[in-house]
Length: 349
Image (cartoon, rainbow, N blue to C red; front, side):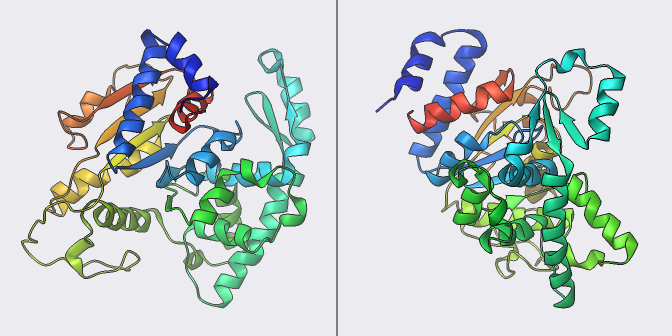
């Protein structure tokens, strides 16, 4: 059954980027209907744009099976969770002068386009709770990924007294409840990443409590093989192994699992990092596995010389990421407008 949003899209979105949106959403549904899984990547400021309003339901309804996101998107969903009522919207942000921007800085209001994130109520509040988690891990000689600490923060309700939105609108709460696989490349390029390094430099913490980007890639490779082929790397190591020693001439096996699609919101490391796992498995590990079985990118980056974020999907064929026959879509528009509509169509709203 199609709800009113889907019906509106199907009736009005007939050409150009609008038609690409419908084609991509239909392709998404078709991929899932054949038993496929979907991998979603989040770049930009999707969490501050409150994409969780639709993304969380996609997770709950098993329309998304893993996510790669920037460190900013990981933390900003939690910032919004605990400080939503303290955010400020600047409708005339294009008219702000340098003096206006300095006034926002003096008030500790960090601007993301038209939205200001309050430092004390959001960033410092989460910092205090995360520092305790990191210090506990240090005392126990534990080592975890960035998202695992966030999952624990939410699971143990360490900041629940500060919640200011309906938990159903937090995509990270939905991901935590599903124990969804998350991959956060370049986490140090985030507020909490900066805070973590600062505490390490100050002697409050040790870098050893945080697992790294290369380890994320290793876990992603294992997850990809297990999902598509029900096989782990070397068929003998766990997804969290510290090292992988591959036997020579690993025999390929026929795909027995689920194909995986790739739905990319924005560009940058959130998309660049995970899509490389397939050529890495093929070319560097000499393992047989399927390529990504569906690809869609929502981007407002135009195609230009050397622009990877603006590259058309066909370019990925030359890198061994997509097959010639892989369904490929690109929607050149604002992801804050497009992604909720695609999700609504997939959900049948």
